[in-house]
Image 1: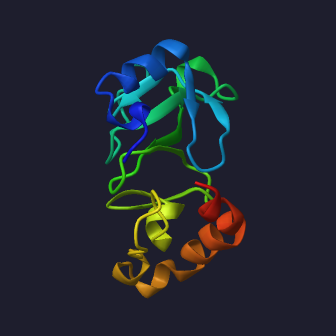
Image 2 (image 1 turned 30 degrees about the vertical axis):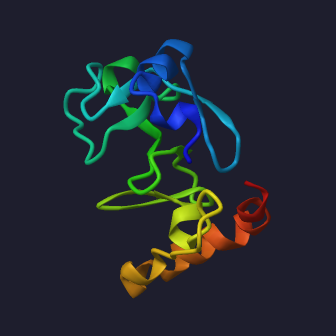
Length: 137
């Protein structure tokens, strides 16, 4: 069973209105100003996922720079930040719990075997940082 926030079709709009993404792995709150693939303030960028985005506060306004703050797990539909300890992007975003098969208290079904071996360092990073959090939910 997913939390109400994961099944609410308006949660992306609510996050943008709150201007905050709350990661379901690390529980961090991160500033955002847009959800989608093409931020209006950076028309040269098109993301491969619907992502929570932020105008880069360290770049000049004319640079139209953008930061991907996070996205939605393609497996469990949870909001996750883009930190390498919390999620992995490979054709779509996957949270650490789903990569390691520890989502929602179900029987573990690890997705890690489906990723190319070249992603092993990133998958290892997901496991090292979040082992204790896998058993808490």
